[in-house]
Amino acid sequence: MTDALKRAAALIKQGEKGQASQVLRGILRENPYDVEAWWMLSYTFDSPEKAIQALERAVSLDPAHEASNKRLAKLTGAVNAAAPASPPRQKAKPKVQTPEDGYWEKLETHEKKKNGLRAGDVVAPLFNNVQMIRLAIAVVFIIGGGIWALMLNMTETDTSGQTPVDVVRAFEVAYWVEDHETMRSLVCPGFESYFSEIWAGTYTYSLGYKPELSVDLSDLRAEQIRRTPTEATVEFHGSVTWTVEGETYTYDYDDEVAAQGGNVWIGHHVRLIDGQWMICDGPDEV
Image (cartoon, rainbow, N blue to C red; front, side):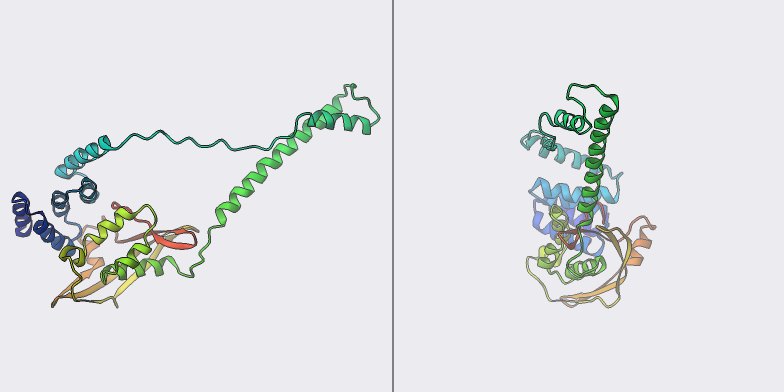
């Protein structure tokens, strides 16, 4: 355990959670993959939900981390036990348009009259014709439904004029300059916990105020590695250099991946939502 982690542990034991949090966030700012720091950070939160987020991050980095797994199981069980049970939602049955009563009988009578036959006659070929009509209508319904579903799936188009790379780069730039409004606007609905985790690692959150901060992003490169009509994955290369309150630091994306033995990648998953590409990462995806 490093001296900084020992100091944070001592502060937690003394009940100084605020000071411990600042020490741990400083560690994570320089090395966001420090499992011990994420585990220890969970003890600085009064909210079980925030503690769970920190522990989930620790477990995603090291699934075998025993202390994180035990505490995560304990907190998750407590939160689930306290949550009110909700009845399962039932899907509404689709309404199917069916012919009116007597339709087939009227059709059969009409066909018989047209061919000079009485309504009461039993003619096998005519019966087969009616059956074929029923089958044809069923096929039309099936094909029509498939075409409708395909068209529905294809209606989602990019109306923003931005590519996935544009959005991912904008989000990463906003992170480094600590522009939380832009970050929040680019996060998918339902992924607010991921935004909270990322924001918790900023200087503004840790210090309680936004310090004097300058960032050089000229060497930051975003590269699209996968894309479908509605989803994409973008990864980062290069480095970022920043200066905060007189101290200068450099973060090299490629060096960080190499240090992890190539077992991680650094980037974002994006989805097309209402015509806008948005960041849809979970705590275990970055």
